[in-house]
Image 1: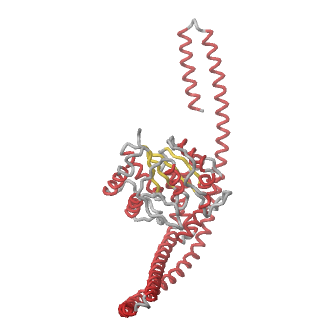
Image 2: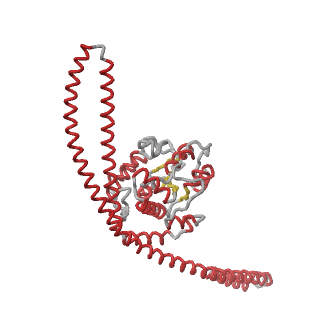
Length: 440
């Protein structure tokens, strides 16, 4: 049986981990060497292979981009040989060697799928894709909680990841899945994936997805205010119903017009994220210091009755205190440095706020352009109505052609004795039918 790779695409915080976890329980092999779980983010795991994530980070770095700053074109053919070899090594590793249906899950794959597709097919394996979609509003809330990312930054990333996932998978067998349907109608969603992609899932009782763990998701689906989200919400089959090329052109025009604004927001996120990491590190050091002090005090209390030993320990404690004081002085210098960096960060934030005010004016301009785009959409709809009329006309002509064919057949029956002439007329009728069908 030919090996299949089920690749899960979708924006960060869009439910790809939940889907991967349930598919793993249903028989898809995602390997075993995963990145570490984060209790407050994904308590049940990310199901992201450690080497897969490392390779994707290397690819993004090669393109001078990151998962949160990926708005420049990527030349998928210009891939270093060592990275290609790492991809091949992972695909052929012992983690996947015994399975016929394997899975790859990392949101970055939405940006890099064509690279992985090429390497998978070079091994003679099949590729299947699930595109996981969750509204930009819900993703924004989740990323703000996890990374303090601005909603507008999240919406940009959501659109970039979604467009990249759709356009990059146009030539593979794929299925579109909504986060809301996965969470509240899991069994039917898995059946849809299984049937659409011709897989062989076990379809056992749901054992991984738990709606009690949901955050930022309501029982009744809420449509995001983001324009593309609204377009998707109005479609029964988004992959077929939406003009993705048009949406991509509009998005690229937006990126071109507001590149300075986008760069400022991305750099602001980078600076803020770095400051948060430093603050968390300082807090952890303080907590460990408090724990150590508490431990030392408990030791002193326990040793009160052992005076001789206590005196020795007291001497050691004094030396330790002297050492700790030297450490404290050293940490004071580090804290002063941190305070200086914090002051600089505040100045940068103030500057960023001024940039945001400037960009508000640009946003108004963008809204005007959006209004023009909507008018263009209305025009496109009028063209569609015109084409519908033309299609009705074509159907009428098709009906006439069928009547003509029936007439020709009756003539053929009457002219059975004139076989040569009948054959000539039949040939002419076939040519006429072919012409009519080309017109239709």
